[in-house]
Length: 275
Image 1: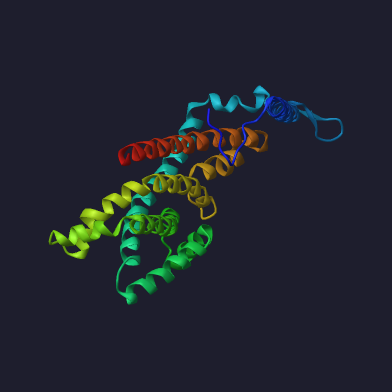
Image 2: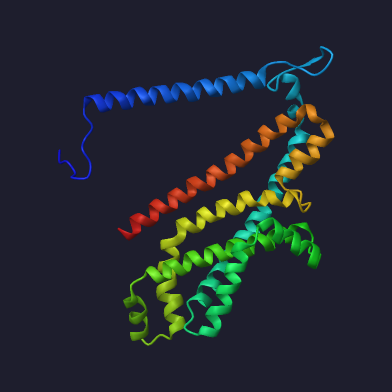
């Protein structure tokens, strides 16, 4: 086995120390999680000796036996995926346009495009939603969609521009030598390569977009978070707030982890194609 000049293979003592530290840290994490679960599960005193059941007690979860309740939650999921789906398609289209404008050889196109991109990237998404809703009266759905499209489109555009910049200059020259115009070379030769190269980054950004749909809660869009933590929690009372929180968290984790797995799959396929 060859040794690197920058890294010495650990000896028996170092391996033993590393193993002890790993076990100790693992035990500390497990102990901390166990104590947290104990605090959440134990009965708690409200006032004058009155107690309420722990957060994992069955009396806090009985409402989830009602199919109609899951219908309301499902509608929140559909609303979340609707806003995310429309925003994702529009953001990719906007990103392609922004990348083309940023790589233009005309300075009067580059400078305004760069200024717009920096403004959109620097503006908080929630503030953008509120501005669109209050200024243009678009309604909650389109306030969410337009804000997410602008912000994520700017990020995707920069990713695609970086992908184009990373391509060898010979790619553009090859297209021009075949009699293509600069725009034809960009679309038919360079852009497909840049898009494939940056696809994992784009998919990862779409994961962020999906999570940011929860900001629609503030502008009144009935996405998953508003449907559960606001509407249903207010209707059933504070007794079920933690239960709705855990269900909402589980649904968001399922959606986001699924997208993350897809992003890793795309990254693996992309790297195998390049190799």
